[in-house]
Length: 365
Image (cartoon, rainbow, N blue to C red; front, top):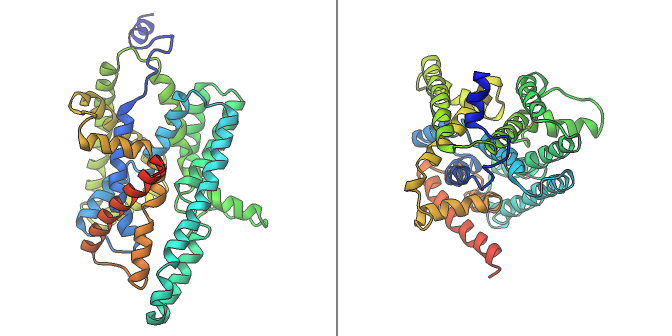
């Protein structure tokens, strides 16, 4: 009985915390800034410098996991998250992936007529290789679409909150055991490769990220019943903070500040096991708590806060277009990597370019 009274002190039977959760908007928008820098190196095939390795190492604890977690949480807070609308969103996001691929192919091909006579054999082969990868590329749009379809099914089945938690737990354990297994059946085998397989064109494997989305759903359902978010996040920060500190203490003790640590973080980011899922969720909740408790210092009229929230609001558009300057620049550089300092300049160019494009889309100018 005493335990029940403690629970009722923090949580309400009715849904009372139903407003927009801006702490996640700030966190998501801030990560778009990181993405500009990280992808400037990755898209141009450039070896990251020390600064980028540190930034990327930190980002591996959230990144795509953050967007998937917020996506799951968003379906709880959306007023139009029925099975039908989730299915439409899923189909739309998968279509966006292949439209985005077309944009990438155009960006890669634009410089080719100007540089083809200067290309050596290996550079021409790199161009063909990149075109082959990006014609069937699967990234976060495809992954989001697939998981929206799964959420639509679970919604249709009227799965209780505990069911989402169980499937999240099971998928986090099962993903490393299932991922990469070939299915030697025409067509079906290729579809399975998109969902659970590994290939040059699969940036993210949806199977690995299902757990983040379902944990986000569970967290969103719990959050709607929280009476006092300040107390709630203070507890969250303490618990998740212990996990965050423990994670980095273990990583540094096991790998030191070395290339092995960078390689391990790179692998576990795209192919997270159960412990990495726990660590990632702890990072997400810790920084969400920090943003919430520090909200009095975040002024929406402040130009930086305003821009971060704008990134969050139009994140799909920024994500779709920000790679274009990188691919065009890569082509004019004869499909060869850049110096690290040039990538930082390219990141700034991409920020300016996408800002102009997104504003054109939003304001129909």
